[in-house]
Image (cartoon, rainbow, N blue to C red; front, side, top):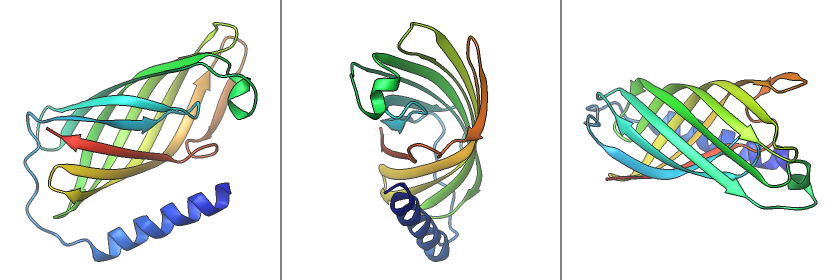
Length: 166
């Protein structure tokens, strides 16, 4: 199932890149967005982004869930929050390619907190002028109370987001 989801995302990103048209850069300066993010613990977060300039933005996100058993049982009741910086490196008419370093904190089963650093690369496709779909991948370093883990950022759940530009 994981391979199928990653294959669909790869085909989607490939098609978007092939059919992208260079055009004027959208004016993002001063705009807010509200959307979702998939966090590194596998749940969906509420995210708010603000663009400082046309190519640089900051995003904060927060998620909380109560769970038991299954995939999510390894985390128990969990919350995650963090901050993401965003830098658009290539802009097309309906597509932005960006880099996004992220720092986040996660607390799970034993109320122990882990700190996660992610270096990511993302693609944002504008379905409408004020509605976008995006996907990111990257490298993740998680430092916990008794462990350190280095992995890809898409090894559990792909990061797919929906955003509404206000």
